[in-house]
Image (cartoon, rainbow, N blue to C red; front, side, top):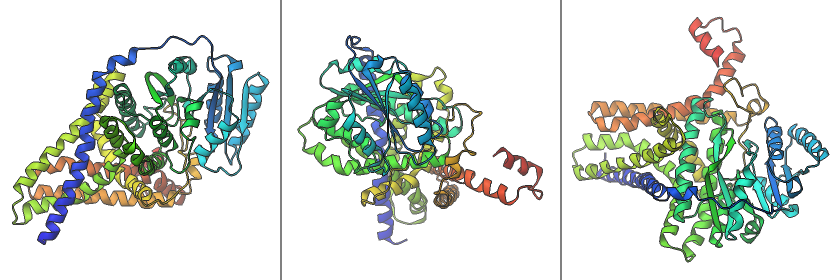
Amino acid sequence: MSTVLEYSVLSVYFVALFILLIFGAHGFVMVYYYKKHRGLNGLRPKPIKRPPRVTVQLPIYNEYYVVERLIRAACRMDYPRERLEIQVLDDSTDETLNVTQRCVAEYRAKGFDIHLLHREDRQGYKAGALRAGLETATGEFIAIFDADFIPPRDFLTRTLPYFADKKIGMVQTRWGHINRDYSILTRLQAIGLDGHFVIEQAARNNAGFFINFNGTAGIWRKACILDAGNWSDDTLTEDLDLSYRAQLRGWQFKFLPDTVCDAELPAELGGLRSQQFRWSKGALETTKKILPQLWRKKLPFSVKLQGTVHLTNNLAFPCILIAGLLNPFVVFIKNGVTTNHGFYFTVISVFTLAFFGSFLMYLHSQKALYPDWRRRMLGFPVFMAANMGLAWNNTRAITQGLFNRKSEFTRTPKYRIESNADQYRSKIYFNADKRRRRRTATGIFEVLLAAYSFAGIGLSLYYTELAAIPFQALYCFGYGFIGYHSLKDIVWPQIKARFPHEVWLPRRVKGALQSH
């Protein structure tokens, strides 16, 4: 290996690990602020005496299995009926529209002020639907719930009192998980979301930093939305975009960790993959738009710094991908070339501290929520590996956002998975997914990445670089895990369709196929 190539590999590897160190070590910062200001979460305002007018917006697009559950939950909320307006913003192009028409007619007959707003063109996607609904909304406050959420009965009575402070523009509640234990995929997602809500949102909010509306399970002051420039569809994360624009205008947000709005987690990898892609790409688009405004604004340096980390944290995924690809080369350089890089490898060994920052953050979130947190944290290595396995998917999203490649707002399919007995494979959205060919290619590539990481383990064993093996094993397992789940729901059905009787297979293999 030439000296130029050798130093190029080591330099890129160092930069990637250094960026990962920053984002990983930020977990220590979040835990510090979480513990420092934890007592603030117990301070509650007095209940409201005169209920204000509230509009509940339910943005929907092809949500046949869950839309009725959502509408009924919204109508069950404990709030004076004469002070409540419900907008069903249904842009659906399938049978969902028939369900919403029936439900809206039913509740209108019962005296509810509920309306169906249907757009034919779906311009602006979710942001466009919210913006269109806002034009006719009569409420002083706007509560928003996505189709996979179940608003609790006391949602409005618990959130509205905080608006007694005229500076409060938005109140966000914590997400719960109705199907957390459905599969290993849902359990891993729950760990990640719990860390975000219990630690990150609470720590940032209590320390006076910017937080974001999470797109659902929150309530806005209508004047705040309009003052910040209304919903914009120039990014895929309209919630993050409006959140920062509003706070840059001087509005304050409030996060309520003890008010929980349950939701359905994606039960299959296709839905999770599209959700992660949208969040990663949209966050990069929002960063390009908002970051210059953030640094031009007269704000404390700590607020600007935290906002920067918050907006850019998805940049960790390209660094994860790069570090995994270069790791075998670094092992070879350390052992297979004559140049002495002893000081370099001593320095990068410190970067492993980033792992412990992330671990502490998720540990405290599980400890705060669950009595059996020790058992739940046993899955943390699998959670870390799965995040590594999503690096290729999310890096593609970030690259598209970086180079202004536009794409439609791809919704995450919901199947009303509420118990372990529920299934998604027989439902229309799963079988009508037109992106399967692309998902197959992506899954195959991720399996190849797993094989590449496995070869890296072999190289480390050859050179007895035992310290490198745990991280290479995480890459190998992560890519293999994501690749397997990418292909499982695509390849197995094709095999079963082509060989319906499977007469040529061993009995053990037949049983495995039937279980899928």
